[in-house]
Length: 210
Image (cartoon, rainbow, N blue to C red):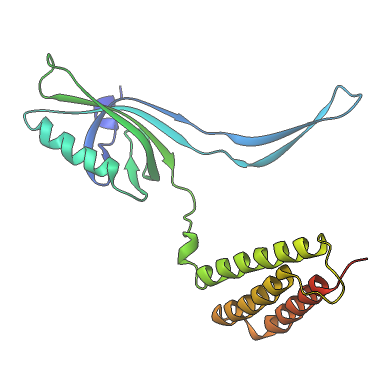
């Protein structure tokens, strides 16, 4: 007969050991269901795997349970993905969206944890870390100003030959866009298209509408 106590792996997270009372895991496939009109049938489409989740009731115990609980808490609070090893599963890269700790007076030397892990998935980069992102954001903001000014001018009654303040705002915004586009170090093959777009919008914004 199999010795189950020896069959399980020691549980660890970020290399910090702990014990497991019970573990739950869930996953599946994301399936899109499309009913067919006037039919008893429907169409299903596999949209890829769903997020894998692991829920644990874990604990640390012994004369040094307080120190072990602090070490485990630090591991759970650390940013970024890390390796989780569960008794019945192999290593998996996970993140920790939620955990809780409980301690009872009558169970000295025992600290319990309820933890939710999710599979780490693909990493992402913050927007500000993308080269030229701040310059591109300024370019977008200047474009919004120019479009708003152009719209306001075309919807306003202006006497013939009179320069509207919004037209001046359009010209100013266009100059800012040109400067920001230069600062963004855009590819050379993109510059003519940007310059043409700026000139076109500026011209249309300055033309009176009957």
